[in-house]
Image (tube, rainbow, N blue to C red; front, top):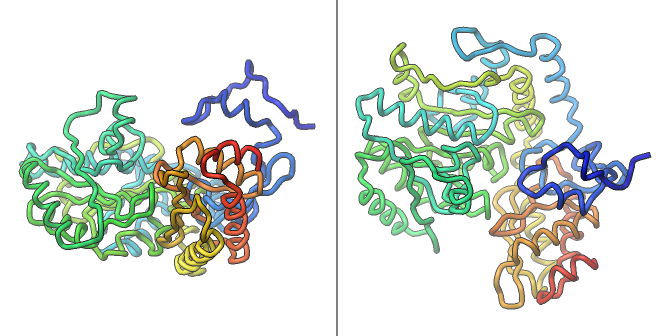
Length: 444
């Protein structure tokens, strides 16, 4: 029989970014997820919940995919590991995956390096950009430009590239050579591109190695304006600056195209991938680059000496190959757009007139719901946490960020399941009284 409480004194696991004691105080062993089926998770007590957050945006194919699991199992039996750090040759599956990625990537991204997370991919991209300029006789080009409030991962260089001051305060001092520009705001106009050019001119293009952007912001699902992205592309090309797209979160169909870069048609010089690359079935990241960058690392004195033991792990690569095949054979990116539109439209209808409802928008299979208090201000993070708990008690898993509340279903979710998600979420939100949100949710 599963015990109902934890022993705080002997519980060995240290959880992620929430105090472990908080986790143990509000849950017990019976709340552990023990099985997944399609879009559903089942806990140790047998209760089911619809995973409308797809893990954390990575379980793009849902749970129990025998094609992915069998591909991983087959690779593990045949050859579980080959080291690629120095002169060792890769497993065939690694070569095949690299070729598959270049076949679906935005134009010009013809070379692939593997790592193990999105943060590691960003770190690799930053080091690659600086080394590229050094190898080409421009060692002064070291500055990496990002956007305020952006998030690019937890390794130190990725954290420095992120524009989140709280992270810098908690873990600083940050490495030198990073700066952050304000995000473009308001309706997209050509002026947003002109403003970016002026900002980059003020920094000095002769100092800038790279600019890193999320084509769609993961925190709120807001695409960067097309004029802004086009201006970034043109400026980087003109001034020999590498444009990096961080698509660790936005890639593989989440934003309605295979990659968020496809929305604007702007191709970067470097693209960072993770999460959906294996549909969450294994840890894998990738850095895609142009052949021009690749050619700058062709000698013993210019080699890119940045690698880890598990980069391009064969079992993870087998999972990624099976995942990419599923995207194509099942037309999942298009289905994701259908899910996003359905959730947006149903939530608009169901929450119309609800005092806490501030609006809803969808970019592909990313649906952002803005909720407000009685003063019209966004709900606090504490209230969003209470909302998440209330939804789980009703059999629905949701996601929230500092900017908004999010539904981001697996691309394999059925329309009937999406309808359940919309109705359940709306019923929880409709029960709120905006002046006492936390108390309402605890009683729901």
